[in-house]
Image 1 (tube, helix red, strand yellow):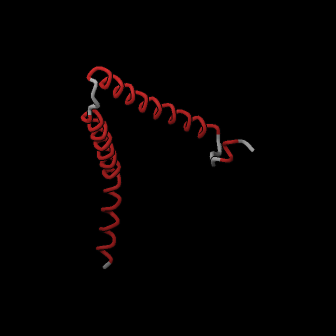
Image 2 (cartoon, one colour):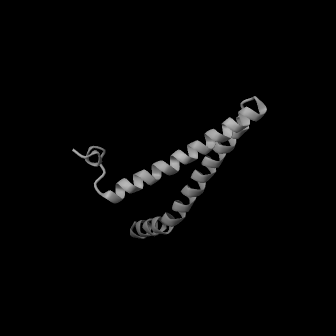
Image 3 (cartoon, one colour):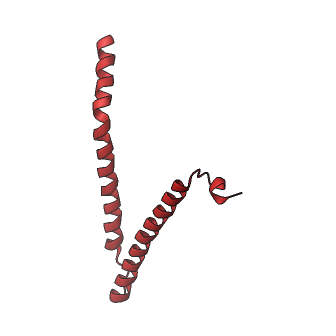
Length: 88
């Protein structure tokens, strides 16, 4: 049995997308680890502000992404509410 069937991936393009996603995530984790190692080796101390910067950046990206999708859904939701209000 091929591994793609075992993990629930149907087509080759999905396998390729999973590999690309893995490489991107792995490189981000690698850059984070290199930054931690660099700061630790230069200062001799673990710098918590570096982790806070990455956490805030991830939170900000999530908030902005959520707002982007929310703005696409609002006109449709507003139309749905107007229709319901008119029939009552």
